[in-house]
Length: 132
Image 1: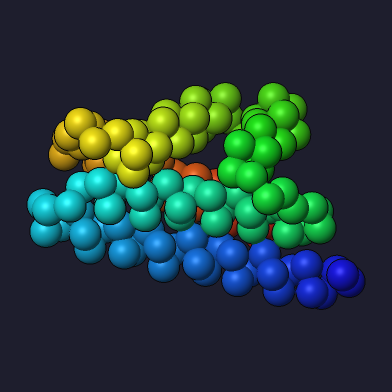
Image 2: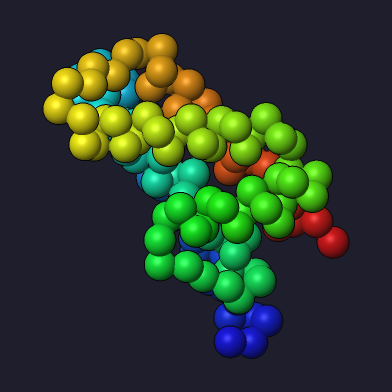
């Protein structure tokens, strides 16, 4: 893949992250189906991270590998704040609980935190990608 293709893929993934976050916010605004809002907020985070990986022309099949690589290369090296790494890990746990735990009852507060984490990461990724 050439540099132009990598940038194009990165822009697409960031756009997809923003669209997915808007979907999460729309679901959240109804006050219903918070599990779906948590899922969409997590995927907004995931797509934002993959926007960065596109620039490096690297990809992984498993979510845990994407998140692990991001934490190792970008959070641990101080490119992104450590707090965002912790928030992403929490977002992953909440998404998994929302999707797979039949007894999990997502709260408005935790779901709102998911949305805030997604927005925060998207803003940080966009800032990072727009650096000269």
